[in-house]
Length: 222
Ligand code: OGA
Ligand code: MN
Image (cartoon, rainbow, N blue to C red):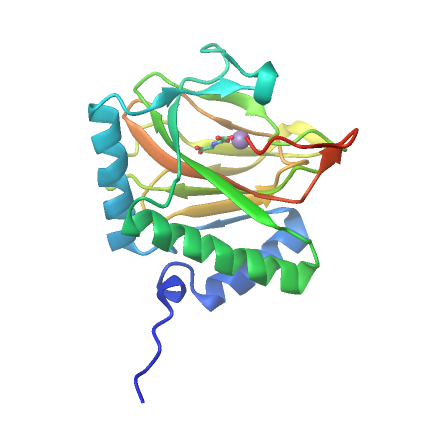
């Protein structure tokens, strides 16, 4: 009998998934260091740097659909939505499908879709404090961020800061964007920001979504 290989299990282990679910329930956020496979981080990082070098990234904006517009004073990253075109992307997305199942099984969240983009922050870029989903518009339910930067220096800046929902002046976590680190939090309630980075900074930001319609119009997915 040939052993079946579960590719996604090497990306986020079952133990990581269990710790993540527990942390989400207890505090609404999770941060794990060294939990994403280094080879995968390396492959994804190379892919993003290649796109950055070939002008294949789009300046990120804020707002969805018709409301979408650029605001460099709010966020300065450039992005590319994951499209499954590489083995590395497919592996990452498979791991997220696996995580979606674990979240649905233990928390009955009814998550049905995952969307994610590569993000490249050039030196000086930041993303001001925000929440990823507006209350009542149950579109984005759980946010994820995977970091891809090998050897992040202590003075590299670019940390993601998470704040207490009922007291947004209170910092609850500061996440160094180093390869292997994976963060996850409730999209509607956890304010967060990206501090100005001093180094080119690479991440994959993603969201598990619930099917949401507003006035009979299916919520646009990006
Ligand atoms: C986002 C975001 C955080 C990060 O894209 O909404 O908050 O660390 N990203 O890249
Ligand atoms: Mn965000």
